[in-house]
Image 1: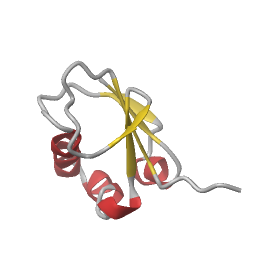
Image 2: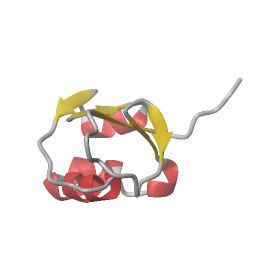
Image 3: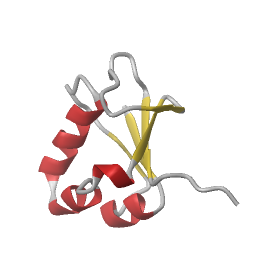
Length: 81
């Protein structure tokens, strides 16, 4: 699956996107897998209240299923202007 990172999440991880093979059942399971990879991921996902997620380009929750999902995007909360 493609995993996309935006704004400060991208800056902390160091890449804008990556292809990941995962056995994670939910978005949160994927986050736990990523956190265990390296310190940069652990730092990026240290405060889950400061993150939002989109599953196949639809805003979603961290308990969303990953069955059949092709793309996950992590980003900070959106602000208007």
